Structures are given as C-alpha cells and as structure tokens.
Length: 272
Length: 296
Ligand SMILES: Cc1ncc(C[n+]2csc(CCOP(=O)(O)OP(=O)(O)O)c2C)c(N)n1
Ligand code: SF4
Ligand code: SF4
Ligand code: SF4
Image 1 (cartoon, each protein chain N blue to C red):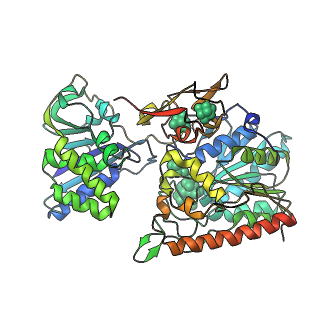
Image 2 (image 1 turned 90 degrees about the vertical axis):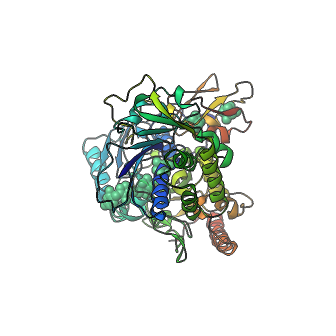
Image 3 (image 1 turned 45 degrees about the vertical axis):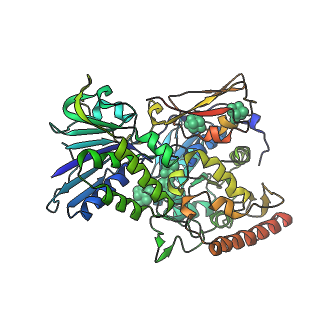
C-alpha cells in the first residue's frame, strides 16, 4: 500500500488533487481512498488531505501518519520542515518550490523533488491554483498514476476550457519537474505536528497566507479611504490620511488592489 | 438612518484581527463595520457559523434554535441590572436566521424584545460546506442544489425575511450591503438609538461558496445592489418604507450573475427569468417608496 499526504492552502485544491489521484489510479485498476481532513478549512488557511493506493480494497479508515509520499502544493508551506513529519525512510517529499532540490532546506532520510507549480499555474490558469500542476510532477517522478489517467480524471471533473488549461498545467509540470535528489538540507522535521487546520479565533500572523502582497504607491494615492474601509482584516490603517498596511494582518485577498479608484495599490508576487 | 460620508466613519476598530475567515470574506468585513458602529457596549450572541471576525466584546453562545430566546435572556438580565447602556446583539448567519433560528427569532420579534439582530447573509450554510438555505437565490448552485441532468441549482426564490420581520410590527428593519459602508453604518447608528426589536439583514458575498476570486468581494456586493438583486431599504415600525439607494436605472442582472461560479450554468432563458423577477420586485419597491408606506 502506498500512502500519500497533501499539504496546501484552502483554494489551491489539495482535496481535489487527492480525489484526482484516487480516480486516476482507479481507472488503472487499482483501489484507492481519498480523505479530506475535515476542519475549518478557509480559503488561504493550511489544509491537509490523504490518499491510500493498493492492489486490494483499502480497509483502513484512519488518517495517514507515516506517508510514503508527501506532496506540498503551497510554496510557503514548502519551506516548513514540519511538512516532512513522519515520512517513511526512503520516501519522497514533492514540493511546489521555485528552486532545485539541492537548494531545499529540509533534510532527512528521504528524497526531495521540486516543481515551480505556482508559476506554471499563473501562466496556464491565470490563478495560483497549483493542484493540477503538482499532479503532473507527481506522475513523472513516481510513475504511480499515468499522465493519461490524470488527464482523463481532470477533464471529467472540469469540462471545457478550464479542463484544457488544467491539462496544460499538468503536462508542463510533467516536463519541468526536477527529479528527486537525497534530501540534504539542514532543517529536520523534529517533533512538531505537520501544519493543517488553524481553527477558529484570532491568529498571530497570516503573512504566509499570501501569494501576492499589496504595495501602496503613496504618490498616486488620493486619500479616498476606500482601501481602508473595505479591508476585512483591518490590515490597513491611516497615517496622515495615507494607507499603511500591516503585513501580519494582510491575507492578500486583493480587495484593496481591486477597489482603489486610482490604481495606487499594486499586487506583487511574494518572494519564496 | 443617519447620513454620513466615509470621513465620518469612526476610526476605532472593535474587531481583533487577523481572524480565521477566508481571504476576502464578506461576513468578516460585515462584523468589522457593524461593531465599528456599535462600539463595545455590547454583549454579542452567536450560534454555530463561519468564523467572520472576533470582536472585543463579551460573548454568549447557544444552539441555533434558541438564539432568539437566549438574546431575550441577555436583554432582560441587562434590564434587571439597570444596564441600559449595554446592547444585546445577535450576529448570526442566514442559516441561523432564515431557517433554524427562525421560530425563536419570530417569537422575540413579536414580543418586541430589546434586541439588535444582524443577519450576516451569505445566502447559504457556508461553515459546513455550502448547503442551500432559504436565503439562497433562485438557480444558485450549492452542494445540496446541484447542477446536472436532474438539477438547475435552487428551484425556488429566497424567502423575503426582512418583509416577514417587518410584519411583526417591530421598530426597525433594514437591508444593507458591505459595499455601501456609509449606508450600512448609518443604519446601524440609527438602530442603536432605538429600543425594541431591530433587524438588519446584510448581504455578505462569500468568495468560497459563491465561487469568485476573493479580490472581487466588494464588486460582487456592489453589483447585487446596482442590479436590484439586493435592494437597500428600511422599514420603520412596520409602517414606513424607504429605499435608501435608488439608481435611475438598474444594471442588467447578467452583470452580477456572470461573475459568480454559482450561476455559471445559467442559460439565457434563466437569466431572463431572473431579470423579470427583479424588475417586478423593483417596480413594487419603487411604489412602496413613493407611497412611503409598508402595507400590512
Ligand atoms: C442544530 C444544528 N444543526 C446543524 C449544525 C451544523 N452547523 C454548524 S455551522 C452550520 C452552518 C451555519 O450556516 P449559517 O447560519 O448560514 O452561517 P455561515 O456558516 O454561512 O456563516 C451548520 C449547519 C449545528 N451546529 N446545529
Ligand atoms: S489584500 Fe486584503 S487583507 Fe490585505 S490589505 Fe488588501 S484588503 Fe486587506
Ligand atoms: S484606495 Fe487608493 S487612493 Fe484611496 S486611500 Fe487607498 S490607496 Fe489611496
Ligand atoms: S466560507 Fe465564505 S463566509 Fe465562510 S469564512 Fe469563507 S468566505 Fe467567509
């Protein structure tokens, strides 16, 4: 039996990716189980999902604790060593990360492979929904699901133009993925739990929810206060009538960027 | 309602952020705006729902069904304590308002309890993963109103809860939108000064459940009003009716529907049907506005 754990953020499609893998391998005659981690998965908040694949019907019903493969579809979570918690010896860590495996900081007795799925998703889908791109990398590196079965599963779920663009993302990642290398980085998973649901209430910082960061051009700003009043997270305060953004509170929703009447706020991709 | 400009909106914040709602969450912004206007002399009552925004106020909590009764208790306890400076406030989803909490809500309204009830209306049960409520509009997709060979989304229009609450002869009923913060806050400031049962229904787009990019939350909320899908009005004492936003001409509903995934499946005929419904409703509201009367 092969066990997989996904890490992503609400809105990137980790749960859908787990189902697509299950559907694809089922088409190839295997048995599979996709498990979404039920919690308060909010768009932008960490999300976990699991897959089990076997040649026989899968009877286990618990969550996956010692995965053979961990797939991280979010570039910022890809920097957190805790995503590798519990990976089996000789297992695989597949990261959405813009650098080759040699530059990954996480280390252990497993392999690591990387693909820049966010760039691929932005260029094919126009949005940072990275799940289908990462699946292309998964297919190439593990051979567990064939590219064709994944394509079929994607087109069934997303008919029409959206499906076609997702297949393009899948194929591009299949070509562009960096093959696995031993994970030699200095950071170890340690004892922490892998990141998943953040729960209710007030959070310390949501800086790592962002794919894009709003940046105000104070010269262009006409002090209309609209960005300030529309920010759900009170991330914007007014200092001498000009907006100042608290980046620990900003989730990168883009409302302020979209609503500024003089386009004084730019949305800049966060560096990873 | 009180008329204000954006410069009159208080700078103080009463929400503690960042919260755990999604990026671009409409209800999270609604909470911020409502409590900005109310201040912190508030006991906030909640029932299960999405997290929206935490407020710096004492909180009470109950099951869905008893929010109206629990708020009655809070309000009467405050009266016994002689604390008429503190308000009993419900901030509750459309599932908790239109459906599950409706019986106790109606009872509290009929008794004219001294309560302010806000419905953070995202037109479905979102916390449990987008199930239809009786606030879900006609033909909207939800996970329980599927689109496929046997379904076209929700088969019936939403129920008109603000009118139903007004029919309880309560001092104040209003609709509001997060895209019109001066209108919303003007209504909250007015309601705050009254006594008795007050109800404000705030349309709060939900990017996750309505299927649009989180940067467009305000645009969607604004189009709902500009197309007449969500009219802004107030009803005083169940008698006086006033539209608070009255454009010369409404935008076509298509502009609102086309940017949301939950309406992506609509055919031209279905869009026309919604347009006809909205036009008829708008005519009716214009007449009420002209008469200035709410017919009971
Ligand atoms: C009596 C009862 N039924 C069902 C639930 C499960 N439940 C928790 S939150 C929720 C959704 C509430 O929807 P709504 O009031 O519209 O608020 P939203 O989640 O959309 O903010 C449901 C059904 C519950 N807690 N209690
Ligand atoms: S991107 Fe969203 S959360 Fe960040 S400052 Fe702008 S409106 Fe606020
Ligand atoms: S919306 Fe634009 S112009 Fe208005 S205060 Fe914000 S940055 Fe300045
Ligand atoms: S599902 Fe909708 S209402 Fe709930 S937190 Fe997310 S955006 Fe807000």
